[in-house]
Length: 317
Length: 86
Image (cartoon, rainbow over all chains, first blue to last red; front, side, top):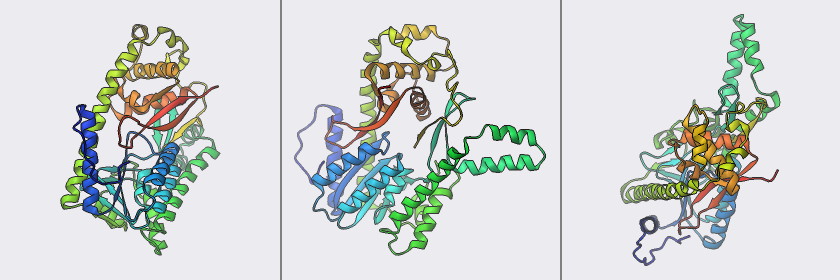
């Protein structure tokens, strides 16, 4: 990883390589402007997970030992909340001075937790944070589709069933009840909300809002249960309104951060095109016998999810 | 070729074709990346990716890991589904 200083670069023939060089230069320029060290976390479509914790620790251990101020430039849609908490504590340990999270465009879900772990958040005008209610991915056995839901939906579902029962629609209420999850599973989904809130409180109350436990608790509660949908767009004005130390990037810092974001997106697109081309070749060579090895539900011989009960949880994001 | 076999199966939507291709790649290579899923034919949106990914997670015993890309000097990761031994 670059240490945020300008290094002489040879001109690159490959467009992808050229963009990468340009990103490195912009990153160094951003570090010079801010007089800090720059730590990029461009996750693109990758989720925050256990393996990333290891890689980040390796980077910090090798390159950030005597580090005062660190600016983490983050672009992420989120991931595993435990891993995000772990990464947050590592970054805090290595930033001996100020730890700032710079968000050119997105730090949603678990990445929002990460962004709240520093001293300050810097956001461009289109940048967004997101709510922290965990997302549970499940196979809907009736629709035969993968669906996402939040533990917050459990409350509203139970309320709906209660209303139907109280309005005399007992059969309907019973039918709905029968389609609900195993109670322990429902309980564990609800518990996931508390874990998110606890992590947020822990991080906020020990750095950004050090000494203001009441505010930290309010913000943690707001992020986990205070927004109607997981996709809710929390811009810098809302972040400030709820009490976070967030600021809008301006001037040259804004220009460079936005250029880094655009170059990174351009790089992702080039990589996707390259991958698509490679995959095209690979698909041509797939042996047809493989199709006989696919699970029956993928071949339409049985319903996807058939034989599985409703508690068949497949992931938490 | 796999593509010929796939056209023989009646399919209600194109995401299912993508899912079968993804499953075949997973079986052959023992792993598939999210970037590969994103690059599959008929995968156009994040929702398509989620459907393919979710179905693979549901149908196979896989572990989801993140692997660091090695092609560039920039730190970048991609999600990989790895087939587990049964």
